[in-house]
Length: 273
Ligand code: GRG
Image (cartoon, rainbow, N blue to C red; front, side, top):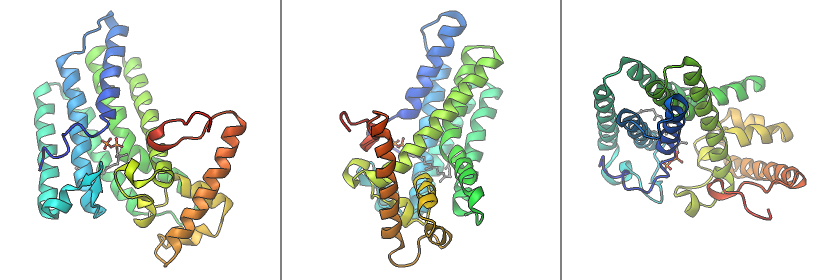
């Protein structure tokens, strides 16, 4: 069960960013092009924490497909899926302890706290419209960006003693992580299920108002009531989806006017729009 997602089918986006950040810091510090074993471990641990959170997330969301295949909970049931997620997280903790550096342990365990807090934030919804975007960004930082930000910071600590570099690495990871999630939330509306490897409009079906919904709501204020009832009335999901797509098409028009082709599946820009 624990091996199931380590089949090379994920994008490995996090370990890739972390190894590149390690190289950048090492070159900056002493022109070394080698990635240290401990930095490589951080990249591996980042992917393990990510995978554990996916396994648990699919239980919480009762999801049945991910990366184009059945989820762990769908095949083996919820109880075993929770334990498999725990086991991957415990293996990541052992690998983290083996690095033998308390600063790195402190930075990477913060990620685990943030992931859980982010998941709790997602369960809530702000009644005040003006607070919703800040709430969404805080949730996004904790659920997605903290892992990338803190993993980048960890490899920078291992590669370079300058605290200014640690802060730059953290901020880079934070911004890449938030941007990644913003696009992920758009793709939930614009991609097809085959491309995503999971059903589309999944967030709306779970009652979640992500960035594209919050932006569309500025143009279609009747979405406010739908957000508050978490798209639970029959027809809410379909209507909200229509409004969001209308708003995305309008925004794509602005991008075309700026000669920037709109973003399509898997974050690729389509030549010629
Ligand atoms: C067990 C550590 C732990 C946490 C429990 C369930 C939970 C708390 C947190 C959920 C965090 C979560 C699943 C956030 C979503 C992040 C996200 C954008 C996932 C998709 O990432 P991709 O597209 O996936 O990089 P691949 O499949 O490419 O790896």
